[in-house]
Image 1 (cartoon, rainbow, N blue to C red):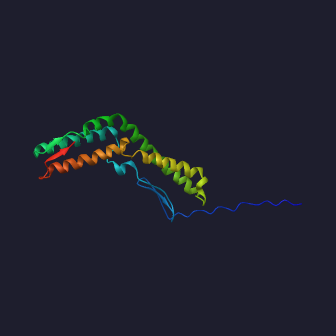
Image 2 (image 1 turned 30 degrees about the horizontal axis):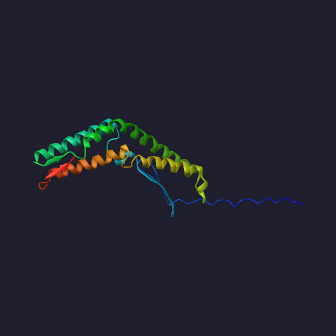
Image 3 (image 1 turned 90 degrees about the vertical axis):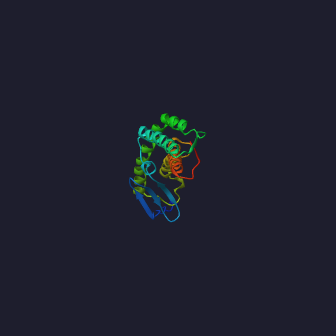
Length: 175
């Protein structure tokens, strides 16, 4: 009797249709799957130093109050933005450091993975799983309940308050 070995068919390499891996964007996709689409922290926040960002938030808060007072607009403090800014002081720096560390990790990880290739049936590919976990960890830093997400919301709300307070029809703003 002769033994015949049966070889598993070789997996087919997935051809990527768009790959951008640079300091401004991480984007890897084919016709059917978007593997990653991320931007660096600097895309979302103009200031990536926590102390400077907190100072900018405090200044924006004071500017909104100043503009409202100059225009005779009533100010409601029910949203407690000042407390939120003070609460962010302790937790924002570690979150920013983590985001700044995760982005290059994702970039180098995807560069290495694409060098090896992604094959059809990648559901059992531990490297893709690890890179997906990094992506989810990075995305979680931008949730509205996370420090970076809260800072982004505060920036937007304070800018809206300054714009509203400067408008001649504005009667009241809430901070």
